[in-house]
Image (cartoon, rainbow, N blue to C red; front, side):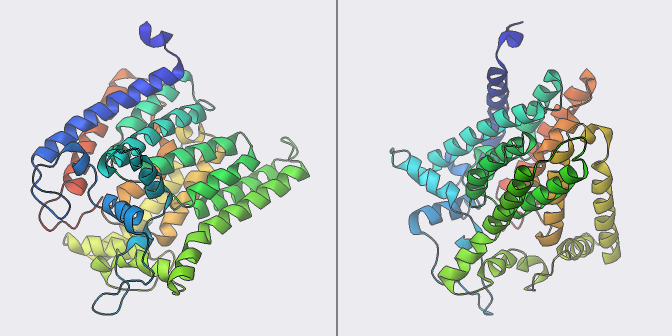
Length: 393
């Protein structure tokens, strides 16, 4: 009864706190068994362990900025460097450190708070389409999702999720003008603005087709077009910044390609080929013919497309499905599948609304247990460092 008396935001906050408490127990267990590595000594404390991997790139950006010249490896190719990471999160964490809070603590606190904000906004968003109990259970799934630990680590994912959730809510409510400041900040927090530009384009087409039963005034048409063009512009802005500072036109692209060079060597970016390259590579890695990997990728694409038409997914409304399709197409165009794939898929978090539709108790308990088990697996495989670890989160 007391649970029902709580306001919706109080219930969301308790769910978030409870989920993060469970994850913290998992993290402490892994930290206790962590050996000395490139980022910490053996058995690091909670906050040091929460700032492994790319979290250190954000700290480097905050303290030293971005390099004026792109670093090169021994073969003359652009090496991994700070330009792969966007500036909003490190700037905000640095602002928190001015209060006297150490970086490791400040980054975790900011990520945690942004994650809570994302959960609150997501509840408001999904409540537009789902009954109260289903919307609240969707927040449970969001909070315990397999990669949800990243939202209490020194990464920009939770801040990106917050901004994306706000953008989606504004889109659903057709408050197009307010998208401009949100997209402007999000584009310099996490990649994805280009996918949102595509979403706006598709949104325009859907509203145009339905304009007789759902009026689409000329003013709104022009506003959607303008915001869509703005989203595209800010989506390309960071590569432009890298070019302007380093003098290398493809500096950002070459920087991103450095992260996949360890798998397939240095290659040019050819849109819509990386997943098939990755499928062949992973198939051969596990001892299977490359063609099986290519077939698996094709099957995955078809399965994802069909999933968007499942009844549970259709309940989420047209705009959220347009976002899912747009982001999926964006990843297919530019991303190479590797160990960080699960984290990169995080912006598809509206799908928790579809997973929350079944009401059977056995289903709900089962999926929570499965998600928590997958959290443990993700922490073991992708976060905890084991020797020369090639499976970053």
